[in-house]
Image (cartoon, rainbow, N blue to C red; front, side, top):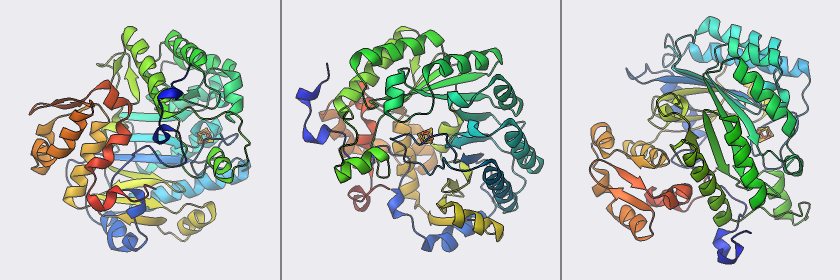
Length: 444
Ligand code: SF4
């Protein structure tokens, strides 16, 4: 039974962004800031001690999921994929010559997409050979690789392990074939078990399973089964996102045009929060620790998510590939978002940026505060030391309002933490910490 009776209009899943990935909102970033700030940041030596990460966007998928809002391609042949990888490697050559990057070791690497596991073993090894010849990542603290279960064979997983991947993230999303089909996913349940068994046998240090709460057709009973099947696999960590409908998904387009293609509605927010809450409780009963609004880990002392933690603490990161995001010397940057403009710019030996934003010190402080609040708890001392800001005073009104709504657990000198109820809706709570002129604008 779903919780629809208690939902208000505000609690329906409408078209628009929910997830807060950074600050200020993407809509504040501009093309004018590319030369003025983005390229200047790349041409400036790094601040000593700041970690550096590399994100590689592999924009290929076997099928486009109906809820996908990423820049992905499902129609490229092997030659075109090879061309893209050539451009990606060339982009890294250009970036790695920039004073902000030159000679720095990589602290973390993230293969995201799209579907990095869409690449053949040969393509993957060729790409990594070229990148690591310029910048070895043997000492990186973490190398994450996102996979779609249906693209994995034992040989490919062995190659993925061979390039130094330490954290394998399996995009399971759901265990029901009917729901996977309804949402346009390419894989089916038998492929999940097979891929997971191969991955375990190859000894990846960390295997994460990704789920989505609230896919089209989801029910209480099926969700319980998904959680049980996840627990039975005993992954090192589990990530659960609540289904959102940003612009540019097939479902959003259909909703906006009223074509009625999808008979099943997306569950409302109270239902999705309840599903994530129930999953977290079941995971906690099995010994897992809830470490953020989206993640539970089996063993806190062994599992980490370096990419997330470094980024949320203001690390530098170069994002390679079409539409990729980065952050360098305190400046947000994003690449151009079409295949043609991206490849053409790199082939002209240009860093292919489309927009940038240089946050003020106050904006950088707010960014870190809201992102770290997604962990469920922040340490005021961190912000006192790094930004000379007392968060209890700076955000007294906002914290009071969270307390009045039942979302604040503690607001003390040693910790500011959210209740479970607050954690499950944290992305909805963050705009109150934005500067006033950012609070009402479109996010993306
Ligand atoms: S697998 Fe991920 S990136 Fe690819 S279409 Fe589906 S949601 Fe988008």
